[in-house]
Image 1: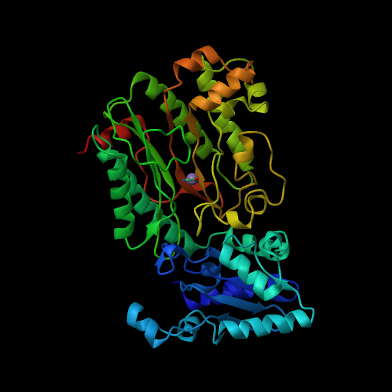
Image 2: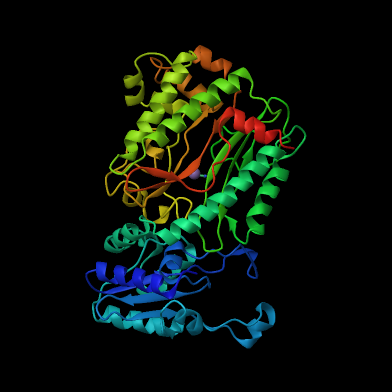
Length: 462
Ligand code: GLY
Ligand code: MN
């Protein structure tokens, strides 16, 4: 937990940014896996964590923008609960630690909300992403679950985004910590990625490291020899000679801050000539993007520059052809690079995706609907304090290749005959995390191996 003053200042800023009414912030509940008492790992809502630092389930809070009053609501555990869970400080004791003296039970929150509604006061809430919180909004405010997202307060969304997008020095320290642990997870995986080892074994070892550091993983681990599937969570394969192994994994610190890295390593310790070619293009694209990071540059420009490096590289290999600018404008690169270049990161690995990428990553500007570009989660001009990932990849996705080939989609720019030769190549990427500073950017966490030489040397350590 940060100091009490951090949370007091964050809430004061939020209250003062909203014209009038009540801000209702909902914490997350325990979520059952297969029966009520067998729950998934509890994760507090990140906005609730940001403003209150409290990791207890079943909490809600009201910030009164007119009177300045701040109240945390929740039902204290009983001695019977302590029998199973051990003694816990009361909600009031925990709230005082973050600068809130007034607490109440959930029944009193319902009464307060009813009174506020009767008085015609505006109640600001964020778009809920959990069913339990949609039900609460229905029961407490009469908002049908299907309308909960559209009836969320845009004023509140924008205020929260405008605070959370700019990371403070103490947050950056936490994110650096998450990135350092994430680097250890990746070097461990690079050394383990040997023929005969299973994806599951590496995933387990990576997970263990995150847990052993006192935190969690920041998203489900991707540990795969089929890197062409972007979010591949299947861990049932055994690594063999000739494969590339892709790890996309990050740590979450005990405070809830994320790291997010990707690495690709040849399973027999040496990239083949073809793997070397594609890896080098991808790394050049990655490094080009990093070289452009500074305040004022639109991230969409960085994305196109990184895509330009990929198109030029693939043209040199005979996989693409034609005019590079036209290829980019038509989205031809998206056959090989169908995802974005990066995303904001903080308390969420995709920071505040629940509040809307258009607000977080585009400053309200509409996103493109073109295949490839539509997956770019960040497009806005960079500002000091922004933290995000850089993660270009090159993927040979057989189903997508077949579809484009059959439709002759972007056939002016793609040499489908040559692409056939690479159809079983798989996919690869590197990913690192950056902070925009006043003058440029800073890598967060210690450097991870990413050059061909460094990756092969890391593999060879065991
Ligand atoms: N690291 C997973 C993702 O960015 O989607
Ligand atoms: Mn990522």
